[in-house]
Amino acid sequence: MKNRPYGFQGRLISSIAVLLDDPQPSASREDWHNRIRALINQGVTGFEVLNASRGLAGGLGAALAGLDRSRFVVAWRLQAGERTSISRLDIADAVDQFLQWTGLRQLDILMLDWETYSKLEPSAWQVLDALGRAGAIERLGIAGDERAVDLCLSDPRFTAVKTYIDVVENDVLRRKITEAGKNDIVVLARAFFESLGEDEAPRTFLAELAELLGFRKSSRKVLAPALEFLHRTPDWAADELTLACMLVDPSITAGVVEVLDDQVMARLARSTERELPHGAAVSLELARVAGAKMDNRTSGRG
Image (cartoon, rainbow, N blue to C red; front, top):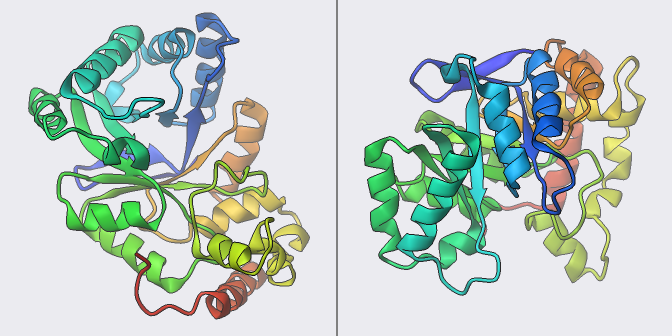
């Protein structure tokens, strides 16, 4: 597994980070411990936790126990759920519970989804600032579409972003990602392996255009000919090449995948150490040109 810079402080993170999610707890603490240790053995050092059951949180903490904590990055997504507003007490209780369940002393990234951010009460910022000063959280992040990247570039309180970046994304977003990287903003990119549910995918221009034209399915179907190289490049699986194409951009800190199988991870990890085939590099640029024809912006979306 190839590592990449994590911020400007000299830390590193694995090129592939793993999303851990347990919305309907079905695995024990021991199960999660074994899964996470198997991933660590394949070189994974970045984890984003979405829905943290007690078993998942405990298993994560146990898997990291006794290891050099500075080598690992743990992000936790705070979600609004059914709440209409997020108070300072909601923030403090949630962070305290996660740290207690994991046994960790610090969160590398407290990630807010866009809905949570929009529901923050003014007093919630006080506790977020206090948690940062106390060292309980190192970075505050925002997860969402292009608006999340814009927020990081305009609000210095946010120093991490999790967003969806397609291999055919318009140059506008890629330029913003580059600017974010130059400003010590950690960029976690959601890797797309053509299995993303509509309700999971952040809003992109291509998705908006597809709806406008009356299509409910992904507009990647329109670009299918340009993306054929992802499936037809010799000695590369489509998910390996998709990930490699995304990681061509040095401003991306890590690609985030939902892979718990350590053998699949071993295969993906090997792809991060390989050079992108010349033919694939050319095909990638052609696909980006095709994508740009559908999204010919010269400035960002609101």
